[in-house]
Structure formats: structure tokens, C-alpha cells
Image (cartoon, rainbow, N blue to C red; front, top):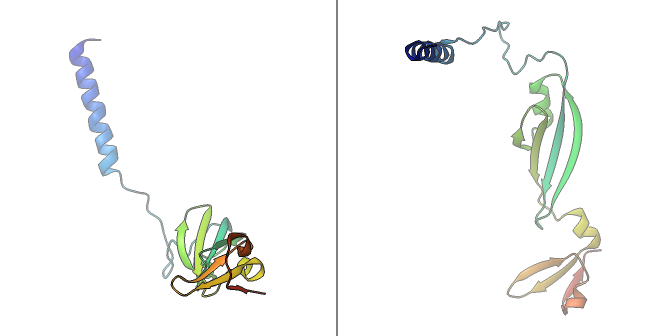
Length: 138
């Protein structure tokens, strides 16, 4: 093949690629009146729901649930009190801030009050590290 033929061929391929990139219209979808794409699901869709609870002591717990979504509107109304953090085709992550200390600290934690630093908590026995003013959570 000659050089001018190759240049013309590459130019035509470039024009065709640009045409397909910019002038290709998306396929038309027919929605019924009053329906939206979020409401239309072609059968049940399974997702992994991750529920994160953030407690006042800074700990975060996770609960993982497998769910079937039939309607996105019903799914989000079920988790109305949660904040959506992340969502993709397979995972949905919600977070909730809990105005309490974590259950682990309630069962296994120790509290220490210092007049300048306030209330501190420990996950192990603080007497080993020299704390004297200890309040047990049990």
C-alpha cells in the first residue's frame, strides 16, 4: 500500500470514529406515563446492603444484609432514617449516627474522668496503666 492511500484510510477511520462518538443517539426507551427509570426493574435485583453505625466513642459497627430490590422507591423508604454513603450495582452503604456509646464499651469498657481532659474510655483495664479515678460501665 502506498503512503497517500494509508493517510486517506486513517483519515476516513478517524472521521467515522468521531461521527460515532458525537452523533450516535442513545436508544429510545419507552416509559409508561407516570413511571421513571428508577421505578422500572426487570425482575428482582439482589444487592448487598452494608449498615454502618457510628457511636459517640468513635467506634463503627457494620451489619451486612443481602436484599432483593423490587422497587427502588420501596427500598429507599425502608432505610429512610439512614444516610446513603455509597451505591453501585452490587453494594449499597448506609450510615447512621447513634447518640450513645457502643455496645462493646458498655459491656467491656472502663471510663476515666480527668478534670482537664474530660471523660476517657479504655478497652482494657486502666489500672494497669496507672489510672486511679475509674468508673465501671457495668
